[in-house]
Amino acid sequence: MAEMVTYLPISSPFIRFAGRYVDEAFGVAAGYNFFVLEVMLVPMEVVACNLIIHYWSDMIPTGGMIAMILVIYGFINLFAVKWYGESEFWLALGKVILAIGLILYTFVTMLGGNPLQDRFGFRYWRDPGAFAEVYSTGSLGRFLGFMVCLVQASYTISGPDYVSMAAGEAENPRVVMPRAYNKVFGRLTAFFVLGSLAVGINVPYNSREISDAINNGEPGAAASPYVIAMNRLRIGVLPDIVNALIFSAAFSAGNSYVYCASRSLYGLALEGRAPRIFTRCMRNGVPVYCVIVVLLISLISFLQVSNGTATVLKWFISIITASQLINFSVIAFTYTRFKKACDAQGLSRDRLPYKGIWQPFLAWYALSGCLTMALLNGFAVFIHGNWQITSFFFSYTMIGVFPLLYFGWKVLKGTKIVKAEDVDLKKDLEEVEEYSRDFVPSPPGYVYPTRYSA
Image 1 (cartoon, rainbow, N blue to C red):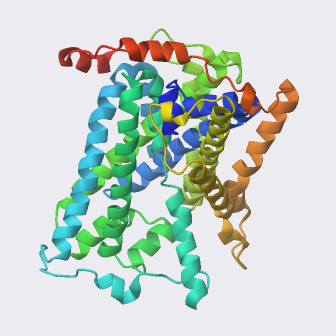
Image 2: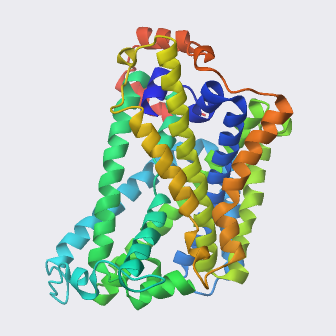
Image 3: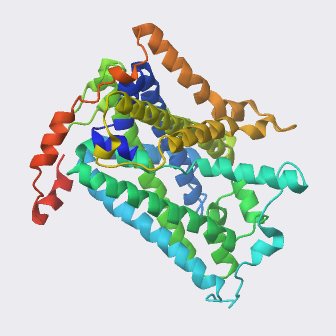
């Protein structure tokens, strides 16, 4: 991804590259898959917000809280969009502080820095142990438990794709983007690895509270393993602060996904791949019908009213995981076509602003790994006694929809796979090179106000 984007930093790059380097129909399928990914994240965050808010009180009905959150999202994205960048900056800062704070909390408390002076260390790695048995016993049960965790981890792999979306608007992208990719990879790896380690230190896998959260959707302390650990250690006030920060993070994420999903649909409409009505904007530049469609789709969060929080969250996570894995598969395969085009047209990768290592082997590895995990996303439903039609539907729908979109558009428009020697590697390149050649850094006093510009 970094190699392609730094060579040609344009908006929504991996979607447009899929159409340019592979096949127009492939780009259409990639665009709609990304839209589904973004739009399904909205109701998931709404459900998560509703779960967290019940830590303090059950007085607000589930349906009422969902409606309230969606109305606020609608107001922000339709009428207060000029404050979007500023608010997301501070909320994102809060997420980083929360992540670092919880890792430091774990380190301090595990060494005895808690009201009980309990120096618990890695106790839960010994009792009940590091590997849970799932669906079976013995080695098979532990392997299936590992597979469950691996599928859940697939849900979290995001970051470089979102960085890429800003390539066309970044200042001096050929210099800035490589650093951004390296930093995102390093920071996300550190946060995910250390965060997972911290959760395993704070609570055992057989915790009753965790089980109630996963299986029954219990609110309150069950919303966070850190809060469970704080309550066990009789730490006051801090659980309320942590849950409040987690709520703000979930709310902020949902608001961001409304913005990203609406702009994804808007981009598809501008390129003639969605109905033209979605190109209509308000005076402030907001694609009003795109926002409305995203909010209407988000009404499926009301499934929580009749099916329970845990069940609905599992459904959303399943379809999001499948879409996300397909998205990364698209990126990996597109890169293999980009490299093949470079080789066919004599463009040396040594001349590119950024050159990835071990390519195209890592791209093929990523493609095979993501496709394998996408097929294993709902493997649990095939285990005897676990069949659920809704779980199967949410886990595998996008795997069926993607080829339907690809072949449907291919038949409708008569598109063809682009040969390596015919790939247009020069389109938009002259403007990018001219910009990079004539770029003059903006004075620091001028850069900051640009976050207020519409």
